[in-house]
Length: 329
Image (cartoon, rainbow, N blue to C red; front, side, top):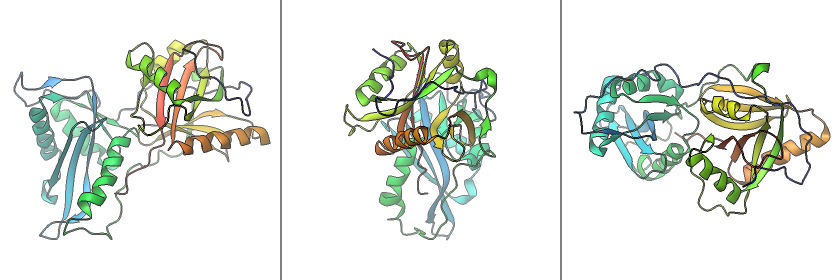
């Protein structure tokens, strides 16, 4: 198993890289959960994350009032829960009760709830505290976003109270622009790299087996194994330690800011970091644009690899990332 290698097209010389910040970004109240109200033995804890959305929908009830909805699913949508709320029951207590009912019905409780609407962070965080689950603001909610887009067509637009003129709900709130990372947390070099999808799957198995640090996403099953997946490789002699720190972050995605000549790393739902810089020469700008084009060709799928050097046979950290397209509602 070889670590990701550089693409033969437009190779880059190693350059200084920036590594993630130390503090995990999990939002207020993370880790402060209390015992659930479910009776002992009814609900078991599982080491999985679920995704949650709680927000108004472009529909009105028979009173002409806006309807709200709770959606819960696991990362693969092996189960789904949907529940509508009248607008006079929009509070953390009612949300916690609804979540608790899902736990009892399922007989299990997840490790964390991921959600992407920063405007709902307070109510979701309080409800999660009531049911003993950590809340996690995250851009890694592609499963929920796709489900919402499906429901827009199959549920909301077919409802007699559908309001097509309703303004789209907000999701992310900017954190004031990308911030620089401390010099002490920078890697020694970095490069644009790529792997065929089959290679990405091999690396994912190492993460799944807990042999290396990292995090995974569901990959489009229609992608061919020879599809080229772009990535960023960070090289450092502190690869294992750096990968361990990175594991504490909820990585969103990496993009190129061509005006600044910078790689931007998104974390949580509102933070962005100046991950690395490159000289804005014609050659390097061309390679950066090509990297973004390859990423766009696979619907924003990409990866971050952390390893000791370019010739390393293995990675110490591997994250599958994807540009997050927020649902239309």
